[in-house]
Image (cartoon, rainbow, N blue to C red; front, side, top):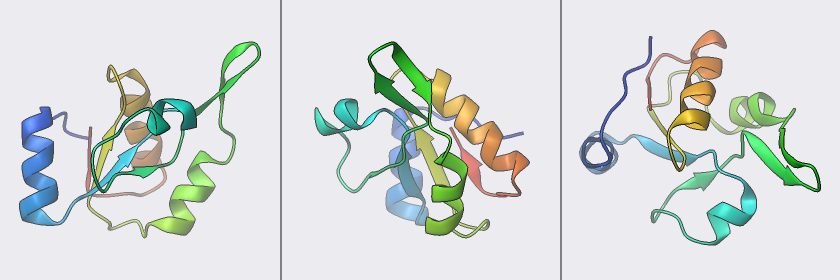
Length: 98
């Protein structure tokens, strides 16, 4: 099971251990402000009816990051990042923190 870390712990993992920060918020949320160096791979897209799942999430992640990549997954409140981290672990990713 993936580990949940505080924002401070996440920053330390990124700065000291080479973890990659993936922000899973929607594109408009990411564009409104995000941590320096973060990648945006939305778990959900904002649409006319609200948020809808991004069917390409796992495919984009698999194309961009090998399964042994050290990943810090983040969002706004923790719900989407927890779902994304669980999906990645189920797909064989071995170094995921939320």
